[in-house]
Length: 189
Image (cartoon, rainbow, N blue to C red; front, side):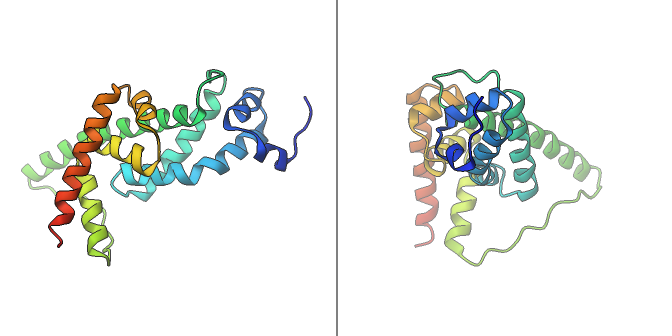
């Protein structure tokens, strides 16, 4: 196989890079990582209540999965949709673990034991904090649909495929999320 320069790799589509990755081309993987790692980190950060450590860990886990599943990527499929489907599933796994952690914390409180919780940084902008709180307070399904659609700029159809949810349901969740966020933001006026 002909050796491609970094510049040539940068001009390839994501799907073309995946074909090279399937042939164990590390340079193609590096190019995809450069394209998506920061964006995936932001996605995880917003999805996981701004826990930077978890977000960084999940970016690494996501790209380990890209590499280990490189031969399962199907030609004709959108890489971006495939990547965000994996990212979304990683978040769902974290939600399950979070539920277990909350149950443990509640049990400790009942017994009078202390649990260690991270110290939240103070934000200077009240509107930004209100927006963050409103997004984080959304039910998981609405928050996921909202963040995938608006923050990750995925189409309703892509969000539908990623979450394995009918398009109409995705639209309904996005609309409901916007309505809740709008009402919370109106309280600041």
